[in-house]
Image 1 (tube, rainbow, N blue to C red):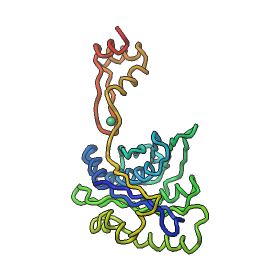
Image 2: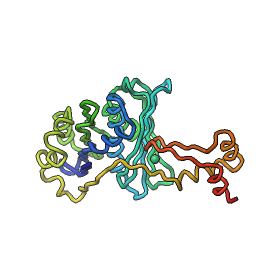
Image 3: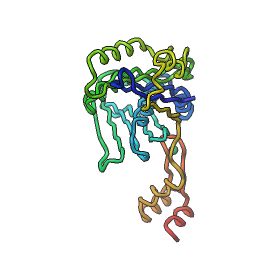
Image 4: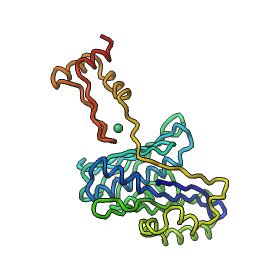
Amino acid sequence: MNKLYRTLVYDDEVSLSVLDTTELVSNAIKIHNLDCASSQVLGGLLTACAFMAGCLKSADGAVSITIKSDDGVSCASVSGDKAGHIRGYAEGFKNGIRGGNMTVIKDDGYSRPFLGTCELKSGDISENFMQYFQKSEQIDTAAVIDVKIENGTCVAAGGIIMQLLPGTREENAELAEKTMRGFVPFANRLLHLGADGIMQKYFPSAMKNSAAYIINPEYKCNCSRKKIEGVVLSLGKAEAEGIVKEQGAVKVHCHYCNTDYAFTEEDVLKLFGN
Ligand SMILES: [Zn+2]
């Protein structure tokens, strides 16, 4: 089962997150029928998104992460909410990440959403995230996000993330760094121990901390016919009718869950109230 353990370690000076997203990533690969490299990119992003969604404070908070190559050929987008519902898609990554930019939008109950961007300097999701946190959120972060694919199937996906809280003492920062180095690569450790086992073996008392909590992230799209009706209504009556005349129906595709919605002439007339 997908798990996100979050707690504080090392004199409560370092936040720790341990994730098992194997099922979540497996579902995404099935829904989108992805090749190996694309599975790794989307799997890494979904795992990072599950982590960031788990850090949200507001109950109706949401986060989205988009990466795009400079030539626009590769694009992936993931989003998640506080409940741990994570979704996403990836296109054009059969050769992995080759530069571009990453944009994070975090809406956490403040008056304006937080927007951060950074350049993709590495083909590795973990490296890009560490850089993002350093530059955009000014948080010292060590992340090992790992997706292991065998014969087109995700056998293990997850990650471990440590972030230094303001005022972390040198010795605890060093301890965090040393611990994190021991978790590269992460997927094998996850395969052998599971997220539960990792917590018990390496951080035995951490889940007794008053700040500790567990979330079960899952792959879940929040689209529905009702929501898509809103999209059709936003086109306006004339535009919607024009599309029906030209194409037979207004068709809307949800990239996140690969679902097609179609609105026939009759549907459109009903929507606009005649
Ligand atoms: Zn959907």
